[in-house]
Length: 346
Image 1 (cartoon, one colour):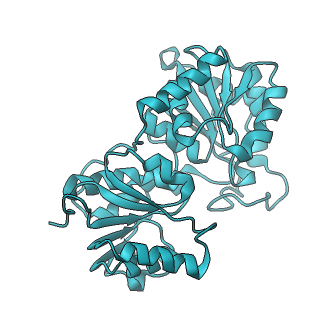
Image 2 (cartoon, helix red, strand yellow):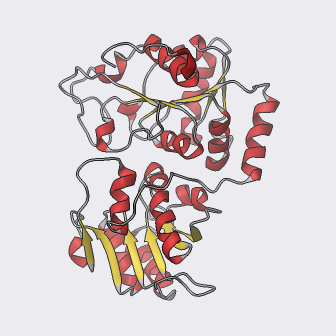
């Protein structure tokens, strides 16, 4: 058995991709922990807090690959740290050369990753990555064929996280029925342009979530929403934002990390897909959630992530997704008993 000793796990997972990818890795962590006990995880500073206190995780090792630990020197330092820990098995859900180099540096006998990774030749076990299905199920392929039903996507939220969210909402007079919107995205073409209009038309208050980079966008939405939106962007931590999302009737979001936070806390989702499509494997997983997109556009999808600008200059994939369509979707998802219809073709 490859479980760790009383004070040291011998299984490591290296996942330094985007926030959403880290959240979607939690079912794999749960499966591995069910076999060998809590595992260690290497991840980015941005994602580290999402795995702290997670029951499947013994320790989060923060790797600032684009900051203080960037370049060859940072890679070497992180590799030296990991090598002294006695890992026997390393799982590599992130298909990067840098992650493969870290796995070699650990000295682990087994290094398990996907066969289509650029550095797959360095793995001791190469797993075929499923070409279809949700990313959760694809990542679970690393654990072998006997996983069974996928565990839920989960976060290690604490009572303090929920209390911080509750305190923030109470201080702004936001009651028990509200909608959360997440208008930001690292990829500019994923951003739906009508969140202010949506906030002004929804029943009840709207709360905006996002990071510090989303503050200017959130302020614009607040200023043009007719007084119906308040912003928590940049004011709450990721975990506190997830706790706030858990309190909401519904989350409206682009194809971005908040979608997966909502999945983890069980909040209904209306997901707006523009240059990307849910068939890439990153859509909602909750029964009853809604995905909206411009199905008739032949130019869609145009990118795996969403390019900086529309290649054709029109951005019709999201510009032609109407506020009225999204309002009806929110009503349906937040109040399923009303069984309201969504516009055909979306």
